[in-house]
Image (cartoon, rainbow, N blue to C red; front, side, top):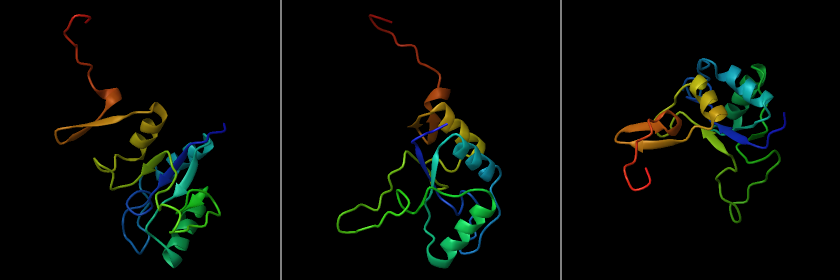
Amino acid sequence: MLNNKKIAVDFDGTIVDDAYPAIGKTKIFAFETLKKLQAQGFRLILWTYRHGKTLDEAVEFCRQNGIEFYAINSSFEGEVFDAETQSRKLDADWFIDDRNLGGFPGWGEIYNIINERIEFRVEGKEVLAYSKLKKEKKKGLFW
């Protein structure tokens, strides 16, 4: 199944527990979820603070666990970054990071969010998924 959607995924605290500069323990269902998304045609971008040797180690760790990325810290493979003409922001449809608003929900929940196209809103101190919210009955002329 071909899919044009790109997902930027952080490494430390997201794919593995945060133990930077070491590689932490793999998060439950991280590689299973990433493989399933990749099989559905999503293009995965590794989006991490790591660089140099620590980045190479993270990429190799993912490769050994069955994940090869569409791009690494860039919007597409082979992209040459020019600070004079480009923004550092990646071109991706979704960003998965342990520092998301509301925290890291876990890989099972992430898979459901992507596949069910769940959107969110903040209510008080809670981040609520639109698909899970109770619909309020409106009172008015046409309701």
